[in-house]
Image (cartoon, rainbow, N blue to C red):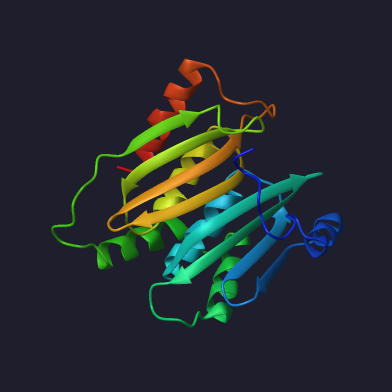
Length: 209
């Protein structure tokens, strides 16, 4: 399958214990990885992605899992402000966001205006569906112009349609992002119907406006 090959198991034994205990956990793992365990609710993955963007972090790879009403989101990131990451600030913002005490959408919009690149090429977004790469999920591939909070906007659109994101692979090529999301519908099935795919495409493109 196309989503195989991760060097370490996911969830890891430590993450499985945290999920079984069911209490919120925010853990920094090494220099470039952070994972969050929290009660499973729509939009959790996109909220974490948004907080990372708010702190100037680009996501290189992400994965998600859920079990018994508890969700795990893991992100490998890179900083746009240099080699070191202010993890204390990131964790503090995540805690505020998960507690409903951070105006995430408003702050991301402010940041997007601050860091807007005049004259940057405006790539027309494109959403593609692939049901052949892996038997386990539908791959939704999104090509779009890079910008603040793009991953947050895409995943928020997917969450609004009750899609379950299992894995995300993120790549930035110059001013363009190519994001691949391995997803299932709310019944745990692949997305094969054309009308369902059309609605997902509509939601993602709207989120990227």
